[in-house]
Image 1: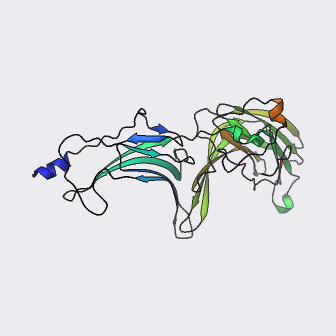
Image 2: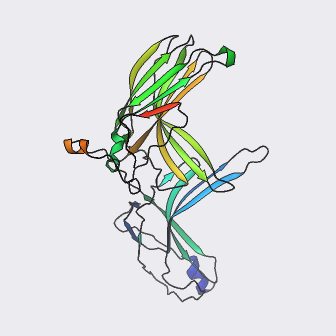
Image 3: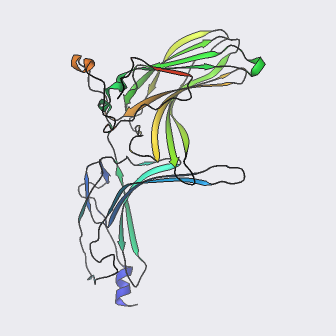
Amino acid sequence: MSASSLRIETTHFNVRFENNPKGFYHPNETIQALKLSVTGIAKCAWKKNKGKKYPIYQGKQIILDYETHFFGRQDGSHIEVSVGVHLYSFTCKIPANAVSSYDGTHGSVKYKITVVLDSPAMPDVVYEVPFHVLRIESLSACPWLRRGIEVENEHQVGMLCCETLPLLVTMRVECVGYALGDTVNVNVTLCNQGPAKFKNSMISLDRVEICNSETPEQCFIRTRKVVTFHQTRNVKEFESVSYDEMLLIPDDMPVSSERNCDVFQISYEIKFTSKSTKRSKIEAFLPITIAHIPFPPETADSSSSSVDCDLQSSPVVDLPPLTRNKSEKILNEIPAV
């Protein structure tokens, strides 16, 4: 075996994050390590049934793309590298709008550092090291998230001529925005105007992963995961009830993320479900926003100040529209921004 091939075969790369052994970063921070390229990519993929075909829907968004050459050039020229330990340093700034790392069912946001040694005599030596970006979200960027929201759904039970009078479901929360570790107090009012009974009622906090494809056409898929839930009371015929349910938000889960990534997003909804004796399934949805940092304590000045916020620079997501609900109203009308 020649000396040159031996040199390539025993090449080893060690990528180290300076003063950050676990590789966790925030937007606007810098990385210092041994490196050739730093990338951050959001992507999604899933199959969709279209008759006898199962096309793969895909989407991709480049969040971070940095590349540097420590020696050699892209034009094909090369140099001799002596035996020994060689140290190369670099600095790469993570964009301010970078999305937090996440690995979901059909989509993900991943960052990595890649070192490539290009040798004319041997296959390229590639060494990859993943790192994580954590975007800190604050509720204070959008004060209108303090406002309450109420959704009301009317569900008809039965089919056509067998339909009974509807069940009215109303859910209300005191504010739209919550921080990790908070408890959501949900008021539920059920008004059963017919003879059907409702059982197996449940209220849950759901995480909704939304993936948007670019090819073969623009399409989206929603994946729902239950974070926490409570079984609630059943409803008898012609009965009206109202009760409060407390849902604890875990302090170790990803927060709402819909603003800075077109391919993969995360939102949260409070979901009410129940089943009638006529086998009809009842569902109602109420959207909320979850962030890392809670609202600051309210003062007389802050309560009387304008609730406008710069949604372009805000790190917190907008309240998504509820197209599935028959009616929805925001308590204390939100000013236009």
